[in-house]
Length: 475
Image (cartoon, rainbow, N blue to C red):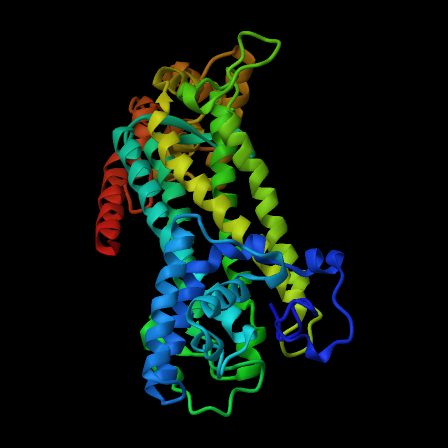
């Protein structure tokens, strides 16, 4: 995909060379069998270029008519899977140009006036990536909608919140799910931002220095829906920042889905027993008949590493390149394509998978009795009664130690027993009153976090309402 020969002796521009390129080199340098997926974008870009050439008087109106007729036939052949891709033509661009020339003659040969494959491929990639980003944004929205549905159903369902994978404080399952809504909300913002920088037109930069023909780049940008043109010809043909940014955004989104996957895997384990996944997302064991393995979440974790590798591959690809275009850049497409494909497939399956989550509320509630989840609420109770927080922290820690020794939870203590546990902290026991048990319940703990961003069920429902409003506004 450069301005160098695609294969000497192939008839493209073999006059410069005294011997043909070997079949091994043809196979090694060809990209047609993976960049052919940009055929639609290549045709769109070529048609916009041809219209501009005709408007500027660079080609005739008849040439344009012939090019449009030929491209319509080629598009139909590609759509019907009848187009014959040829390795000798090396890439999607030359394959289409050669077919066009065979259909319309000299008009097809004039199409490439005022452009190079360098700015042509840069345009095609941006058009393709723009389409992929639009698809990803729609899929993120679908995932979020389904996530909000289950979060609303479980806005008040108690769940142990963890830090260090140790039980910390009660939250609701709905509140926990909203954390992933926030992650994907940032993901969507990143893709919108990447799309903005992607949506700049390189066409017109030609090989590296621009062209001597009186082209109108702005009109081509409008025709193709670009926001602006790339303003430096050298940068226009060699820039792949947008591809790197896209892969970084994909890697972050996959990382978020991988974190969610890890939790689904843990929660599905009998050691937690918080959820079950629908059978269609799980597989059995070849030897253990009782097994139900969460293969889809596990594969999401695995594929995240693969996507991260694509990001590193593109960064490494670009790190040592001098200006302007280099053949190295042919290696940008496979990681870019696979990163997009992987995220698109993952979002599709995830949006369906979360609708099949069966929540085991009794197990979630029972787990909250294992880790002194309301200990912080007891410390806050003492502080509100006038005890300094550090003293309250120490007093409750003593109560937790006593509960561990007895094999019970804090709510199981009587008022007198709690006072006795805290006797070694000056002033603590005096703060414990008959109302202490009201703060040791899971329901009381949840309800007390009644502020924006908190886990109180009323706040969870309000957050869901705000999220739904954002989704509606973005459609």
